Length: 236
Image 1 (cartoon, rainbow, N blue to C red):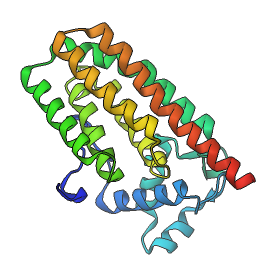
Image 2: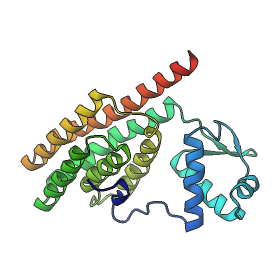
Image 3: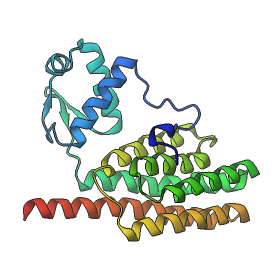
Image 4: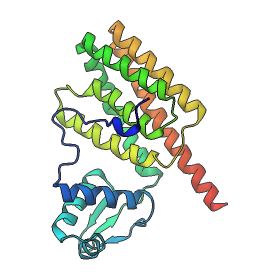
C-alpha cells in the first residue's frame, strides 16, 4: 500500500483549493488547526498584530488567512469588534451537512446522466483503494473518499455549487479528523459506495441521488454523534 503522503485529493477543476499566497495559505492551515483543536477558543478575539507576532510574519498574510477562514465559516467578523473564532459546535456542523444534503443529490443526478466509462473505471479504482486501506490509515481514507466524490462533481457546469461543496467538504473533513469511524459507519460507507457505483453503471440517476442524500446525512449525523459523545465525556 502506498504511504498516505503519496495521495492527495484535489478540488474540482476550476476551484482554487485555497486561493491565497503561499504565506497566507500556510497561516490559514495553522490558524484553522488551532481553531479545530481548541487552542484558539470559541469566541476568542483574533488580533491581527498578535497573530503576526506569534507566527513571525507581517500582518498582510494574517489578514488574508482570516478572510479565507471567514469564507469557510471558522471565523466571524463583528462590527467594531473585529475577527473572532466561531464556535465549532453541533449547530455549525449540522448547518454544513444539511446544505450538502441539498446540493450533492443535484450534482450526482447530473453526473449519472453524463458519466463515461472512464469515470466509472476511476470510481471503481478509488473504491478499490478505499477498501484496500480499510480505514487503517484514516488520513488516507479521507483523501481517497474525497477524490471518489470529486470524480462525480468536478465537471458540473455550476462551478459555484461545486466550489461550495468542496469548501464545506474540507470543513467537515477537518472537524471529523478528531474522531474515529464506528464499525457501523465504516460498513455503511463501503456498502453505499458500491451501491452508488452500481446506480451509475445502470444510469439510475434518481436512485443515485437518493442514495447520496442518505450518504451525506449519515456522515453528518456520525460526526454529530461523536461530538455529543465527546462533550458528554468531558462533562462527566
